[in-house]
Amino acid sequence: MSENKDLHEENLNPESESNHEQSAETPENVTAQPTAEELLAVEKDRYIRLFAEFENYKKRTSKEKLEFFQYANQDLMISMVDVLDDFERALKEISKSGNEGDLRGVELIYQKFKNKLSEKGLKKIEVNPGDAFNVDVHEAVTQIPSPTEDLKGKIVDVIETGYTLNDKVIRFAKVVIGN
Image (cartoon, rainbow, N blue to C red):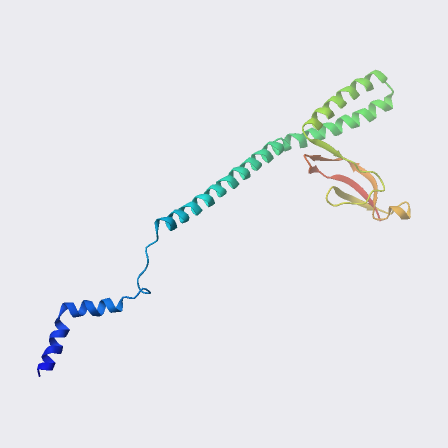
């Protein structure tokens, strides 16, 4: 019975419980606190990533701003292309009438207007009969039987001139394709 008493006392003894708990605590169960160097490395990595993200943001917004200014006047340029077409039609009609003074005056205004638009990035898409059809810059208005065999699937006639603004097509060249 004295053995039972000793065991019972041993179970009630708080010191014996702490001994059991200490033996249960192994290095695997204890989470190590990070050192100051590890914390510094983590924060430094976070800072570098944040800095790189901010630099990418600055580059992206700068590029978007540049593109905005390049294409901000796109609507204006599209409407000016119609005026340019009107000038070309007027030049054809004046040259038919034969009045040399009027023709020279209108040509002078036309050239000045065309030069100002080209300074702002407007370029004419060069299309000639016999060129290959390219869907990136041409719009086929209609197909006709080709006058010769070599014009099959190629451009036969140009109906309306196409234009680009800073290498972006703002009006496709309207063409007739040989069939």
